[in-house]
Amino acid sequence: MFNLEPPKEKLTVFFKDLLDKNPDKSLFKNQEQIKRLTELYGLDFIVNERACVDLYNKNIRTDGISITILEPHHNKMRVVHPPKNGELLVRKYSVEEHFKLMGFTDIKLNYGDFSYSQLGKMAANGWDINLVAKLYKHIFKQIEMI
Image (tube, rainbow, N blue to C red; front, side, top):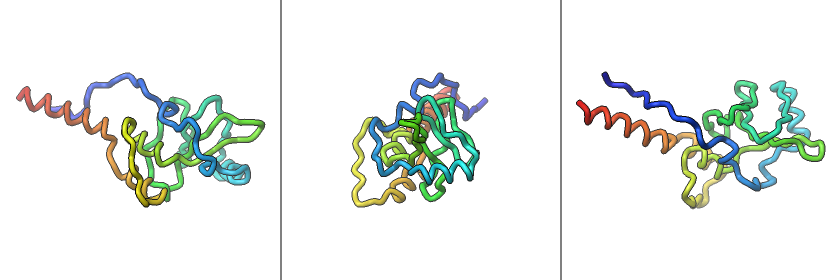
């Protein structure tokens, strides 16, 4: 019997592992913007470790997993950091984080003259290369047995 679902694997890399160590300050929302996000989505942005904010589902992921990578114009993905000096810290994903979450972790990408939005679209409209590799291996293994 042919099955498209590969065997389950235990996660060894989590959302926080793929985040930039020192994200650019321009990615962070100011306190007024964070206040507006709180009003719009009813979220408490106080966390103990960096986490994925899913504005679409009005949720902060505490399981270490990211939501599906979306194009920047959807404006529904954020990273929340533990508060610092009494201030909440919420930011956009960096371009590098977009690509790391899509499986490009060991290469240096040349972004050329593309804008943040264009690069975000490229990452979001792709397939996770690690997942695709696992699916193909699983499919070909079954075909070889036929």
